[in-house]
Amino acid sequence: MGVGWLAAIIIGGLAGWLAGKLMDVRFGIFMNIVIGIVGAVLANAIFTRAGIHVASGWLGYLVTGFIGSCILLFVAKLVRR
Image 1 (cartoon, rainbow, N blue to C red):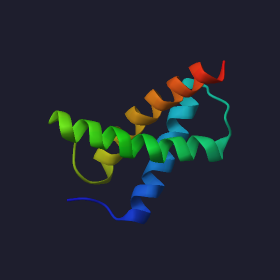
Image 2: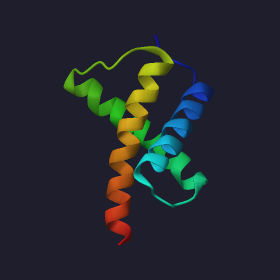
Image 3: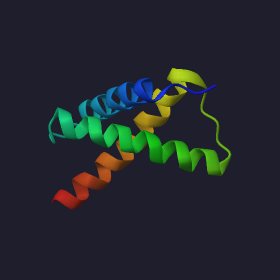
């Protein structure tokens, strides 16, 4: 069972904001939210292809988005240097 588009955007944004706080990245809240949404989409696609199922519903999307956001923020931090 998935969540709708609006909920996915909100959850991805929350995941990006949380990842930005955890990793102490200062790209600005808007950029963290965008990275969170993109990270959620990419991590969800990667996990699905690998056969990894974190959880379903909004909690699963939040965890997946958080992991994807942390990875993207780490890469963005490396590129920014």
